[in-house]
Image (cartoon, rainbow over all chains, first blue to last red):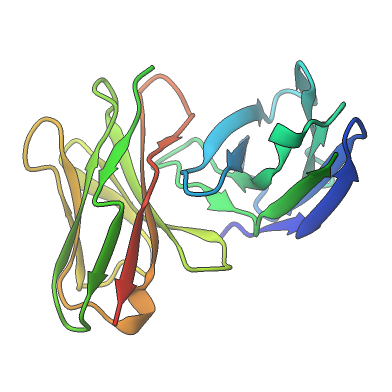
Length: 113
Length: 113
């Protein structure tokens, strides 16, 4: 089955700098890759997603890139702000069938003022 | 904006007791999921539910687990005889037929003593 690996497990950046989180997946059938942000005491909230027919997607300060050949995808946050501090999870799924999400281990991002 | 809700937010139970975790998915969604997150570990898929039946379940989802949609709004996860290792955060998620995006609830933190 699918396995998703996420790095780094913790990341600390200065406010205003960029943050990059990377994930790799194993199943070439996976074709949908969401990123979730989890704040303390809350459930995961979708922040951006990408489908396998697209190489890059951007939404304001957040962007995701996908390399299908290498089976990796990355989250890029630019001009980081204190409210970006949270745990970020990548996930992968094959949109055929039940579409269970397989998650990475999570990255705890801390933005230092 | 519609949200997935879960009750209770916290549950403490004795080993061997039955617990029922409740979820109210977003009203026009047709696919429902349970995931769990043991402290410090990945979010793991438990089960997916569509058209009043289980569409996929993981190895974790053994005979002590069951799901039910008893009415048009609630989606429940029952653990018949809890074990210490069932202590985790349990997340419910739902999605509409037309989207891959899964929307997560805030979770129920289950502690088995």
